[in-house]
Length: 394
Image 1 (spheres, rainbow, N blue to C red):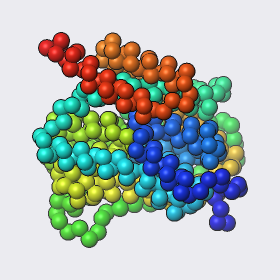
Image 2 (image 1 turned 30 degrees about the vertical axis):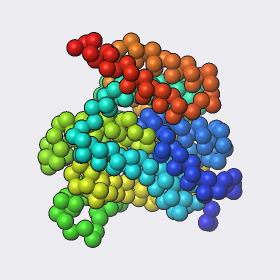
Image 3 (image 1 turned 135 degrees about the horizontal axis):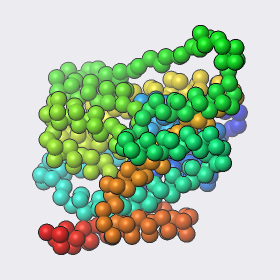
Image 4 (image 1 turned 180 degrees about the horizontal axis):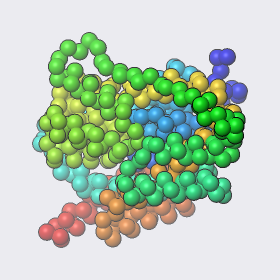
C-alpha cells in the first residue's frame, strides 16, 4: 500500500533532485518547453517515469489551478518517492530561478532598470519559439497519434488558444469527458441515470502564511496565494491576474516595472510564474519575494499531492484512462497553440525568423544538443544585433 507504482524506481531520490535542480537552472522556454523537457529526459531518454505516469501527471496539472510545469515536476517526484519526493523535487525545481529573479530584482532596484533585457530577449525569445515548437511536435506525435477524436480535441483547443491567446481550463475538462464518454461510457450514462454522477470537490488550500504580522507582507501573501489557488492555465495565463492586483488594485508597481517583471520571467529559466519573486522583491525586498513565492507555490503543491494518491489508485480504470487521454490531448493542443501565441510576440523581423528556424533545424539534426547552449548563443546574438536594428529603425 505504500508504493505508488507497481515497479521499483530505476533511479534514486538524489538523482531526481539533481535533475530538477538542473532543469530549474537551465530550463528555458516557460511551461510549454519545460513540460516537453521532462517528457524527453525522464520518459524517453532515462526511462525513470513511465508514459502512463507522465500522462497522469500532465492531466492532473492541467485540471488543477497553478503553474503547470511546477505541478508536473511535483507529481513526477511523487510517483516513486511520495510526499518527500514531491516536496524535494518541487523545491529543487523552483529554487534556482527564485534566486535568479531575486538577484535581478536587487540589480533592478539598485541601477534603476534593466535596459539590456530587451536585447537579450530579442534573441532568446526567437530561439525559445524554436525550442517550444520542437517540444510541441514531439508531444503531439506521442500523445495524439492517429486517433481522430483525440486529434479533433487537440486541434480545437489549439485553435481556441491561438484565437483567445489564453488557456481555457474548462476545455481541458471537456476534452477528457468527451473522450471518456466515447471510449468507455459509464454505466449510468447508458441507463439514463444522470443522477448517479457525483462530483468530488477538492478543498481549496489557502496557504496563507502565518507568523508574519507586517501589513504589507500580509497583503502580498494573500494576493499571491489567490494567484496560485485560483488562476488556471500556465505561464503567461497568470499575467492578467497579476497586472490587475499589482498595478491596478494595490499600485505596488507601475506599468513599466510590471512589463520588466514579465520580461525577467521570460529570459530566466524555470517556471514563468517565478516572476512573482521579482515583483515581491520590488515591493518589499527579500522577505516580499519569499512571501510572494510561497503564496504562489504552496497552493499548487497542495493541489498536486492531495489528489495524487487517488489519481494513482483509480488511474488505471478504463473510464479514467480515457478521461486522462482526452485531457492530455487538450493540454498538448493548448501547448501547440501557445507556440503561435508566443511566436507572435517574439518573431518580429527577419533576424528573429531566421534564428527560430535555425534553432528548429539544429534541434532536429543534433538530437543531443543542449538547449542552454542555444539560449546563450541566442542571448549573445540579441546583444549584438538588437542595438543595430534598433538604431537603424530610429
